[in-house]
Amino acid sequence: MTTAAPQPQPVRPRPQGQLPPTQTRVVAGARHLRVAIGHWAGGHTISAEELTRRIVKGRMDAHGRRLDEHARLAQQAHSRATKLRRRAEQNNGLVPADQTALVTADHTGARHDAALAALAEFDVAALDVGQVLHRRHLVAAARYTLLALPVGGILAAAWTWESSILLVVATAAVATAYVRGDRPIRLTVRPVPADLIAATPLVTPIATPAPPAEPAAEMPSTDWQDQLRLYVEYAVSHAHQNGQLGVHAHALLAQLQSEGRWLDRTKATFPATLREAGLPTKVVNIRGDHQLGVRYDQLTKALGRLPRQARAEDLNAHQEQEPQPGE
Image (cartoon, rainbow, N blue to C red):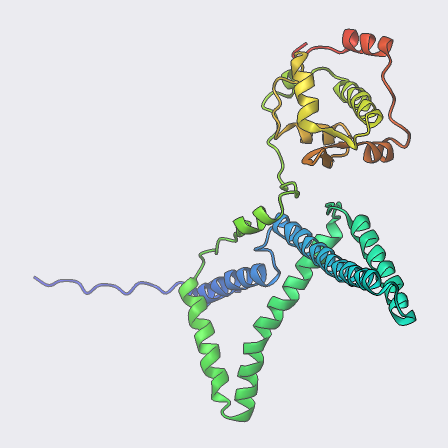
């Protein structure tokens, strides 16, 4: 009994334009590596919140250095003036040179005292997108320069010593791409360092609140934006009359919830509701308490006019007309 010899399988021709499997794997791996390197070198591993906090921290540190320098110079000037006055009491007067020095010391001390009063406490200014983008470009420039250094070193070594260095490097790059294959690299953003968050407590975290599950039931009414703006105008105007810069967002929410409104909002989500209604939010300093809220000057700028002041009949009509949540 004889066994038939196996028939050879026909070789299927590769479609025109299709790369061999090995080359396809290398190309896919090189593409994923290029995307990952570009993600890192472009500074996209750093979040916008971290960049904002670093900008603010740099300004805070510069502000603190200026305060320390003015305080040191003012102390020196006042000490100099005190010594000259003691000398004048002991010697029943001063020579002309010391008299000039005393006047100069008093003038210098007063000038630095005025500088300290003008600097006052640090206020976090609103940063636009361009400032954060500029900082990201600086990070990208530094990282691309860091990547260019080894490339330049390899080219210089190949030019100076042995050109086969390029062959070794190219082989290593191809091998790395082959090992990677068609497995995308997860592009992540590093968390903001805890020490940076602690050093910039006045910066509001950049976060987009989750949308409400049922918009129709969450909103007090179809014209809730107008009603909320009117309420905030009254509250901020009243605070301005009492010598305050504005009103904290949590204070607005607490008053609204005490009246049975906006019970579905929290201290963390209510600032987003204010911004959605067209009301600007910013850190407000009220008796040393820095919290996110609505400032009188920012509200005036947003409205294009002075905020309205509440009268007794306005408050009564407002409370009667404003619908309750869920109506």
